[in-house]
Image (cartoon, rainbow, N blue to C red):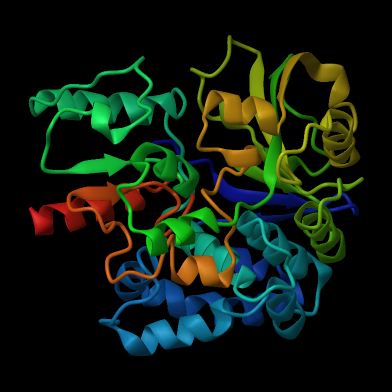
Length: 391
């Protein structure tokens, strides 16, 4: 795993950028008048993380082992991004930072619980950074596969399974699929009430993604943006709020919030010597096939004049392309379902063990289970533990 010198950068129109460092104090100091407010917001959960991680990175509906730190964090996390930004911070710099982190929720940023995503991500930035795998995310899958084979496991690919009846007899089946695919796999095996719940599962906005080959690094106006592997491109709180509202309500933002990764600055396996790769995406309405390339590039160019001149090649994928590559990405939704408060509490259905289904031995382990989408593996780990307890 590689960790860039800075965790996150958020460029602004004045030619500067908000930089998140592993050090909470260093990050806070750069926020000037909001330094104390930033410390007040994050120092508590950072200090209590060893207790909070088990409470937050799993089913939200449970009997807490550490109710006091959870309640302190939860009272803030259940609020909206706009409420947190406007009630805690004076400057547009700090407000923009919170908005960009909160936009990972795919929710309108004035909606309840949208703050939870930004708060958890920024706590994690100060706990362990946002590292990424050398050689690309395929390296994670390769390592998992190697581990499984070393334990005597077998992996079979290239066969589409249309029904659970096609599988060999086993004690446990774990399905890394969303509710829609589970309905197709099980046919009439599931009881009607559970089937209705899955049928009403709501999917969130999709993404439009670009992969670039560049002749040189992105020429950011603020040089310190080049210290971070992850960049939030979206400007102010007001602009990011408008962008996320547009995607949620079926519109295509003229100035979309863009999540950008420039890993090749820190990982020389990503591109030939002297060249670079970058990927970026913005949120779009579910199922959108609108080409957002020009709007994304305009946003990057806004903070990095001359970016377009460095493009050697670009590959674009809309929501239909993404779903074709991975049928779990319904309408381009990479989160396994909308992150509404109701779907966070009961994901995907109200059950004491949300990974289990009414069919004995059948489990869900996808991003449609707690704690939801993200590069963390918690859904699979918790589903496996639930299955092992029953076995």
